[in-house]
Image (cartoon, rainbow, N blue to C red; front, side):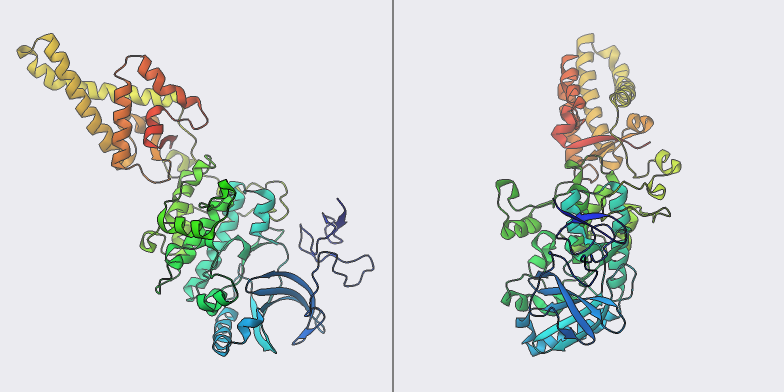
Length: 489
């Protein structure tokens, strides 16, 4: 395949690239003038002026309008101009709302938000003049790399949360957060764009152009249902979906993609009615606390989600790296971020950090400790009644008492803390595969299944433990209850 090389950084890009895939620099033609390459789209606006800016190339187009690269002829300053669909510009009420919302966007000044410089109406066009950001969008990054390494994803997402939280603090809700609206520069800097556009246009206006407000794969249930009380927590839901996709390479609800279809109806129905699976099902090495944070952000009830981006950030336990940021856009070698690694204190205190699966040895000794404790407890009433019972009856009573105590003990301990005394001593813990604490139903089902298998001496125990050598590292009773046993110390 033909290639073109960037004059600034020397990186190779496809011949039809308009910008360098590594540093975002506009690629020049061989003549050294403002040739924009074979990938640049041409239309009627290219070559025209908006204010003092001359439009040089069309960068892309969506249902709401097109984006152009323009240059200030006197200052040689590059900007991006979003020109909205001409059909929308015919609505005077919408134009007024557009200008009013643009005033708010101009006030957003944050290092991780694409700055809006001004808004103009010229002829049939409404346009936003914005800071030009080199690089590529997160959806393009994911298209090339499928999923990001954990530290890269969290480094990127920390910036996005900071930006969106800043906007929320000023009363601005995005309403259309998705990877396509997150720009990633070559140095790993993230910038969120298109704040407030969906709010200005409104669902009824967008319907006229064949575009829905928000993208089905990222829309919160209340947004799909058209609730009037939509607030910033819809953005938090979309951020949860975005982080899910960034970590796994897949969205939580694919709308029949496995059957070769992609139905917005099925996707929206799933967002409203279905509980998303844990991202750990796709990528088991995702830390437990990250999986829980993603799932909490995607709760159906807004009141059960994180109420602020700061809460979301704290749940992820993120720290900005002081080292060089990862080269996200180019997909180069992974730059490790020492600040994202759990400290020794975190690793030994049972904090929710990246935890490996528990070993068979630790699970075995935890079981031995618990069984010895329960035998001692069950022997007490038997010893008191021993004079009045024969050996057979005493054995039956002991088995019944032991079983009852075992079920109560396991169910209560796992529901309250995820740990029995033996597991706590061995530094392991039972968690649900959906990233949430284990429920009483799962705890009881897990304990009952394990107890029934162990009624068959030796053989039952072997049958139970064999599946632990699979990639899921689950015993039969783990599979039945949909749980994992992980190390936490």
